[in-house]
Amino acid sequence: MIGNYPLHLMILVLLWGYIYTSWSLMGRLGMVSFGHGAFMGIGAYTVVMLWNHYGVSPWIGAPAALAVAAVVAIVIAYPCFRFRIVGHYFALVTLALSEVTRLVFTAMREQTGGSLGATPNGALTEGTTVALGALQFSSKWVWLAIVAVFWLAGLWVWRAVDRSMGRLALQAISEEEEAAASVGIHVTRAKLRITLVSALMTCAGGILYAQYQLYVNPDTVSGIAISLQMVFGVIAGGMFVMLGPTVGAAFTLLLAEGLRLAWGNRFPALDSTIYGLMLVLFIIYMPKGILGAALDALRRR
Amino acid sequence: MEIFDVFLLEAILNGLLLGGLLALLSLGLNLIFGVIDVVWICYAELIMCGMYTVYYLHVQYHWPLIAAMAAAIVLVAVLGVALHQFVIRPVLSAEPINQLLVTGGVLFFLQAAATLAFGVDFKNLGVSLPPVRLGEMSFSAARLVAFGAAIAGVLGLYVFLNKSYLGTAIRAISQDRAVMPLMGVDPGRVFVITSAIGGALAGLGACLLVLQYDVHPAIGLSFGPIIFLICVLGGLGSMVGGLVAAFVFAQFISVGGFFFAIEWGYVIAFAFFIAMMFVRPQGFFKR
Image 1 (spheres, chains in turn red, brown):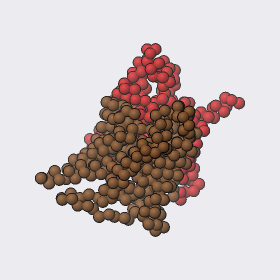
Image 2: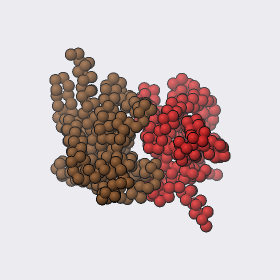
Image 3: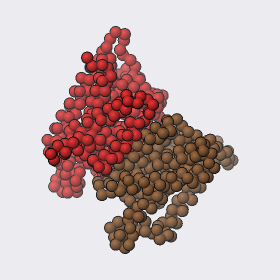
């Protein structure tokens, strides 16, 4: 049988693959968001805080978190799209959003534990492996099944978006907003719809991440660092092909784990150093990412 | 005067000092955006490199502080040129968002490389200037020095851009990239010089920051976002706008932090930024 460690890696690859896929729904259509850490953080923290302080089950906390994420997404995205904030400016406005959430989680340290993070109150008693009401499972197989379902659902959404009229409209918008508007595309509505889908999926990813790791921390579920991690994971894998984000997640995780196994903990940030260097090279020489470039090479043969 | 008002006044004046520092930090980034039309997301990480340089030369190798600072300014200027030549130039004709992302990759690299080389612990320069007292209020001397140097830096750049031939060429390029080559200005050379000046300003910022804060690999993330937001809020590429925005931002942080916890000061400043983007997306001063 498979040990716990490979299982853990598979869970993380699929979970991050799902989150990266959610981000790419916007990114590949020209909306590069540096704010998805906010949605992930809202998911993680809303559920854990409701559970810890009010004993509200994650089954109720999750819809609440999704509702909060939807409101935040609309409040930020609607004016952005309405006033044509695109490119650099969109990236920087969303960057401000992810910093706001991180700082709010840190500042509410009475409730959230500040930058030390928080742990959901354990619901697994001696001998039990499943606490369905608390969404806590000690078996990694259960988690693998859960994240696999979400990951597949994410790919299904990608395909559905790809086949819809909305995708054509959004592609036209990403090329030239004014021209798209002039042929009768409702630019604001089209963008808002895909943003909501992307934000809610990312929020769900945050909920799963918190429940799986049983730990939340402002810096690891929200803020600029996690937002950049999503953007770069997707760039490494390939933004424009369905499995690209997943390949990016697998690549970054295996790189980190591989180097850790090879050299142990002697060089703590070696993987990130190599990764950062590769990112720069990717963006300059291979902007379609690993999978995108590989598919191109196959097609040429 | 009530004691409450004295502390509020102190917060406002401290905000003013912080504003000077932030103005200097955002100056180089703004210059580069105005001239080359690229946002260096890794700007704060260049500052971090400068801080480590000052720390190691002064503490480890016992250089005089002034020499260490001069070396840091030169080194970061060289880093700026290298960044332009090896990273920015290949993507100058690519999509603008790729230029943003590639410097994001550099951010990742520099942060990780610093962790690898120097470890994660906070390093303190060990230079402490005595606080300056003014009535019941007290101010950190390091902040006063930083404020003075920042104002000097801003004025120096202003004079350079407006009085020298090179400065005029830089301003001309920022106004029209297509025509200037026909007038005998080589944009490639101007870009390199601008990158060097931008880097040197980051180096100067590093010298001022290292007097007040401990240096650690993630320090860039703690003030990098503020610098970009200041540039955008002022109108990317507008020097005057950046200056005004820096002082506005600093007041939100300082006075907001006075009434609530310090993080809430930042939250208010960021929320103000988002709101302002909707009201005036082009920033305070449109270029």
